[in-house]
Image 1 (cartoon, chains in turn blue, brown):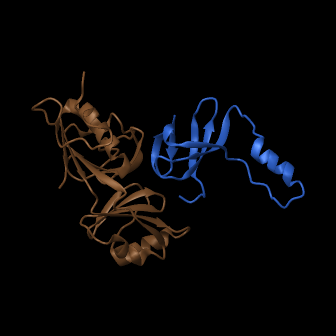
Image 2 (tube, helix red, strand yellow):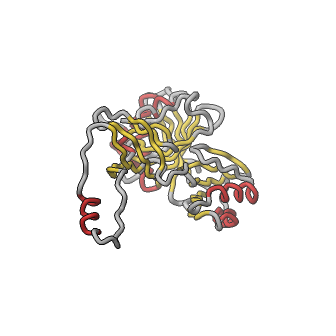
Length: 87
Length: 198
C-alpha cells in the first residue's frame, strides 16, 4: 500500500506508523460525564468496513501526521492531508 | 561464497578501493563529512516570516517542498513542512550565520550528526533501485529534487545534483557503516569505487 503524503509524494506504508481513527475528538475533562466520555474516547472503536479516516505518522519522511481517507476493504485511498490543515 | 564485506567488521567502514569484477566501473561512491550542516525549523505559524527573512538577510530561497536550492555557498534541502537542512559548501560557523533567523526558526547544529555519500556513474540508478522506493527517473526526479525516505531500513535525505547522473545522500553518522555496506553489497556487481574524501 502506498500513501500519498502531501509533502513527500506517494510512499510505501512501511515509512508510516499507524495511530488509528481520526474522527475522534478529545472530550472535555471538566464535563460531568467525563469518565464515561473518556472511556469511550480511549477504548471504544468502530470497525468500519469501507470508508475510514485515520492518522498515519510519516516517521520515515517529513515527520508529520497525515490524515488519510482509506477504504478498509480495498485499501483504496481517496485523499490525504497534513495534520493541522495548512500544508 | 565469501564477499569482500566479510573481511570487515560490521562496526568499521569498509576500506577504500574497488569492489566487484576487475575492469568494470559502474558506480563511484565518495564518503565525506559535511563542511557544516544545520537544521532550520520554522516556529509555529512562522514559516512565511522565516521565508521572507531568509531571503532578505541571507539571500536564500526557501521553497516549502522537498527540493535543493543553492545560494551564497549554502544549499537548502526541504526536509518537511517548514523544515530545511542547510548544508554549507565550506567549513563555517553555520549557527552564527543563521542567527538572524533565530526569531523565526529553531536552528540546530547538525554538522557531526550526518555523513555524506556522493554517488555517481552510469549504473548509479541500478544500485539505488535495490533500496530506494522513490521514482528516480529524471522526468519524475529531476536535478534539485530531494527526498527523505528509508533505504535498507536506514533513514536518509538525498537529492539529485545538476548535470551528470549524481546523487548525494545524508545518513545519520551512526548508520554510516550499514549504509556503506548496503551500497557495496548492492553495487559490487556493477563495479563500485569506494573512497573517503580527504
